[in-house]
Length: 230
Image (cartoon, helix red, strand yellow):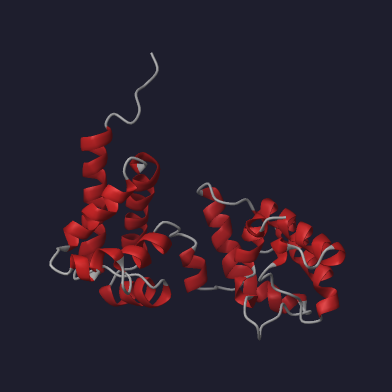
């Protein structure tokens, strides 16, 4: 199987994606640890992302592979259980937990970085590549350019696939402004948590600017994107 065929399950188990971290045999421990990600994936599901049952199915496939073909490419960097021989059983337990619908916690669990990162799939690529350390939009070739020049560069490189990319970017700009209310919060999340940046502008100014340029481009270069059937 292909490495990416189990990516949904791999994202869920990301807290255990370290050489010194294994999925606990004790289900209460992994239930508590995975709850924010499950909640985040459920939110993403409602926005058109992966379905929790799809992820459960991937976990069951992984469990079977561990039993019959543990060297399979699809299991690359796939977390193991604390007791390695119990990995298939633990993965099936997690799958059942997702399918049961009883994963919701009665505790008031605050939003965390890993959960919130699920809300920004476009930004997770765009902000590091264009405005992160050594980003394309802040490279030596762009040292005399403005933040708006960097945004135009991003849009030019997205063209002509803009109708499939830019609306999601605009949406994530709005989500960022809704979720993070101070520049300090935005810097902590988008710089430290995501590895991105906003050029020489504050994020509070950058996101509205990015959204406006995306919308303006769609209006100028791609309108109408949709017309009602007659």
